[in-house]
Image 1 (spheres, rainbow, N blue to C red):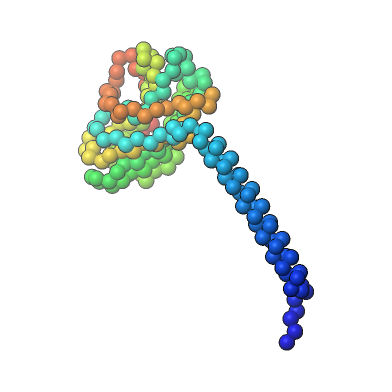
Image 2 (cartoon, rainbow, N blue to C red):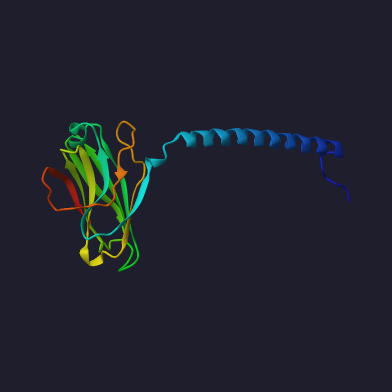
Length: 193
């Protein structure tokens, strides 16, 4: 039986050496590319995304804050800030909850839009944006249902930058607040039920 190969032994050896050389050069380029990507990643701020877990204390709790040297930047939102807010409860009592909310603030306004959820909302009832003009701080606050306060609550804000590309929102310690607080304005609120 005759072989139908068009290459002789010497030619196959040359093809093998050529492929081996290409593979060697590919590995070098891949190594260089990998180093450059790692260098870029090392320069990227690590707190563009924050994720914090809170004890679900009944009532209003502050979960994120945005601080500025100017009340105009906060109250008017003239630099623009916002992002996605991901809310998750950790199962302990009742069922887990998951909700994705879009938040944005512009000139003298802000709004929330519920993008996805598992439609249970027995723990997280409302979300709101408030401004403390004296402290020059803006907050994201959640209303926690007193009946289901045994669950822990995880809050994440990915791609967390303002209109200038600076890191905007930072996690709080989950401090409690009231329905109304002197010198604190509720800019927008969304009922999640």
